[in-house]
Amino acid sequence: MHLYCFDDFRLGAGVGTDDLVDITALIPAAVPPADRMRTLIAGWSTWRLAAERAIRTEPGRRLAEVTLRAPLPAPRVILAAPVNYRRHQAEMGGANGVYADTVVHGIDTYAGFVKASSSIIGPNLAVRLPFPDRRFDYEGEVGVVIGKTASRVPRERALEHVFGYIPLLDITMRGPEDRSYRKSFDTFTPVGPAVVTADVVNDPADIALELTVNGQLRQRANTHDLIYDIAQLIEFYSATITLEPGDLIATGTPEGVGAIQPGDAIVLTLRDIGRLEMNVGVGAQVPSP
Ligand code: MN
Image (cartoon, rainbow, N blue to C red; front, side, top):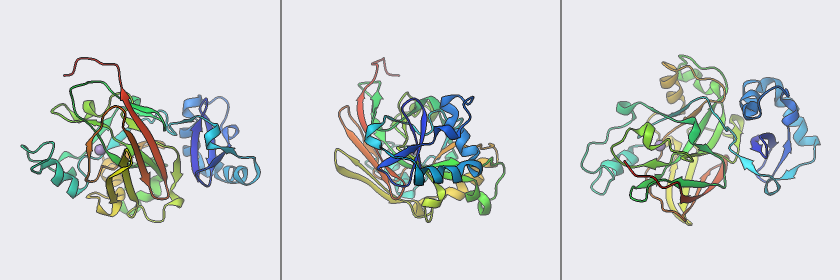
């Protein structure tokens, strides 16, 4: 099932990518609108059948008729995997790499970082670049949405804690600053258009990813090339950080990263999961560090 957040934080559900039915009424009215999706995820075993029935029986609305928001407008935590594909590690430290004069390690060294939840934006909006004189890159990634509280979960049981998957862009400023700063600016975590429930994905170790900029193919990869696969990431992070329903893991970007400029159009496609389209614009121009 594809789950959407639209208009004034209403919840939508659909089986395809063309239309949705409004399932907002499933969630108690006392729940703050921005918490509706997290509430739905946490209580999915209660509401799944009602959502499936609504899709079968309620009139649908075309996606084009609504204003889609980020399906997870305010995740509690966004954990992110640094350098989790070997060919991306090689390109960053290679002769033409962004960090060519330094040794670039992998996730086994860097472990993880946190992106500010405030950096989330929904589909079809603009990523805003704040500095005219710094390099900014796209990073196409598979986002994992946690479905059940996960603390010290072994990898064999990790996928039981996954609610679903979502296209995610980890927009990044290159440079010496800490990752959590360079990747947390407003608009730097586009997600959507839908959270897709885990049952839609046959094998999370075989998710195909493609990213284009202005129609040119820049990234083509598959999660079977992850250094720490999705189950390992959950095992690794949940060993020290309790993950809760609605928390988000950015699994890392493959090779092919590159710079973006105002006016660019980015399209990230995850097979069976969705197609996230974003534009690049100019943000509030402030002095660069
Ligand atoms: Mn990344």
